[in-house]
Image: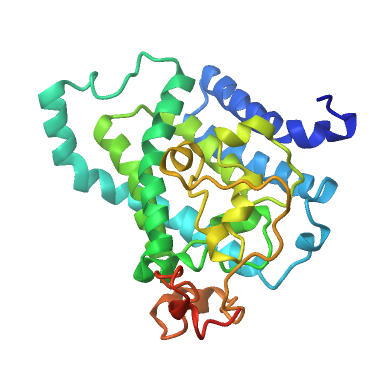
Length: 310
């Protein structure tokens, strides 16, 4: 089937933005720039580009209108995505130092991670390992009532745009970071691989939640892209309990939670409880309130759904 020229931007926006970001990061590291600093610069540049693309080629124009959420999302970015990870970077190596040392004695420091592999191959291996853990943590967050109380914060927006990719309760974020950080401290993954992974993870997360018209085609069978993730934020539970992958969709395909209906579009997103708080501090307290769970574990049982406000 031939591709209409008007579809080209939506086809190439993800590979174009992601490919450019990775190429720039690799080039800066080759020039000798600090990998961590260059990763921050590249990620911030990608954020600005994605914000611009939302205005140029929006998926839904009404999603470009603020819903009293920008301040809340900005605080989530500052606290959950910047301050919290930096704090944990200081704590986790100390907690894991003994285990890492024991593994190094047992196997040798060079045998724990394939440092000799090309950097992009190392990053893909890191993605496979991290995504396996993230998949099961994320799936549990949807299927266990106590965990859902915290994860509901992430599903509380009534629109999708790049900034709410950062909307996570800090306590849940700690749990979500474990499979992305702990295995690679223990394995001794090099800083260059970590930096390229950080760029991929940042750009992918921003685009995954973005309000950009994207038609990624076959790439949706490899990456957990925007077209799939919108269904994950859909209000109907049978649609949102799918596509758990953070960066890759591979584990969803393997474990039967891949969902991509091509004959229709997402309609309403967000929680069944439309009165869920929008303020940052109220969202921090929400998991501990006695409010409706909005998504019971036994959602297949009709008796469980009685009394839930749609």
